[in-house]
Length: 330
Image (cartoon, rainbow, N blue to C red):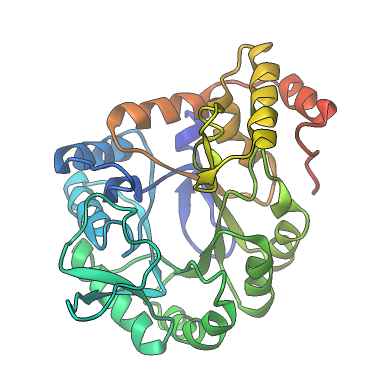
């Protein structure tokens, strides 16, 4: 079996997921519009390639990604593990009120009648899950992540977690987690909530290994699974040139230089930068799966090829010995 479709158990729950998962922010039109036909083809191809774990959120295309994902998966006839997120609800637009969510403008394909609004309340969580089920036309979801609570983690712990815990105890959800961008609030989340899994973006990559300093240690203590997103740090590790982005902002000259140095070292071994970037997270035993997005079947196939490419241990050793990448800390 190819590496991308190898199944691994989420430690605390009875669900097995492929080591490579498909995220759907791009299929909600993140930055660039995606045709309905391309979205469907990409999802169906992923399922046919043996990818079994699919992640989405109400934010992605303001419901569009969930709708597209559900429609395609229901056509696929394949078994799958499905996660979506809570923490935002989609409210009907009031032309007399300004739109407050900072994601406005990020998605080219959106439901024009709604706007995402943060809501970590009990009512908001229940409403979010109910509406997600309807958009995807599914009877259940496997995992619910509390989404982007980095700056409001206290509210998520106090308000969102108790209702998700109830739903888990009732069997409505198999697992609960957080989908975050930074280590400090993620550490607090793992310590103060009984989480089955976390999704952390950009904090365990070729350019940033900060998640292993403490976050992974806390996850190992509680047997909490880890899914890594943002393996390219929003672009710089796909193409480290002037103007590249790092965490969705212009990358510094220092970071671009470092990424270029990593790319050059890898070139000496005939290893593409993108292949090392997508495979790097699974070097740490705390990591369960890697989550990447694709807009087309071509992009998906390229990601799978990179993920399945053989990278000799000598390559990782050379990266660590160069000081460009920190050694794996278990």
